[in-house]
Length: 151
Image (cartoon, rainbow, N blue to C red; front, top):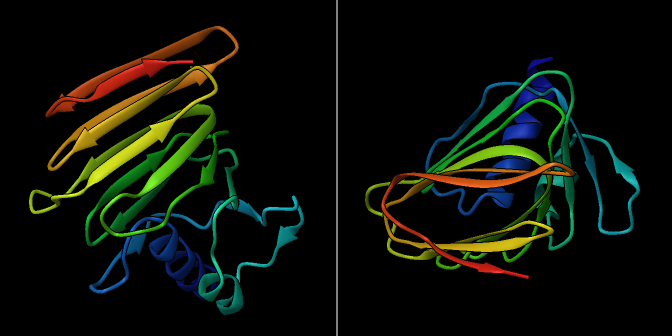
């Protein structure tokens, strides 16, 4: 279990912006798929090769990912796809479910979170809760502000 948590932390740190400082993952209760949809083992190779288009799918429990530039909290049964993994303009695609995205106070880049319906962009220190599913599309900002574009 500890090995899975360490590997999960390594992968998610690479996915979620930067791995320069300590980070933590609250749970290893998720599945990981590459850009071709092939399920991957949660091992060190996956952590080193994270790229655009990888899919993270939580199981029956939420997963919290703490990185040096922010926190991502994925609700249970949520699907997230990696986009641009740069430190200054990271982007993520929330396919289905609910997630909160909070950047650190010293983050100066731009975070983009896309859904099947909208795109949200927040610059600098910010926090948003995004929900997307067949019956609902919603964003709640709890820190800062975001630009929203539909379509």
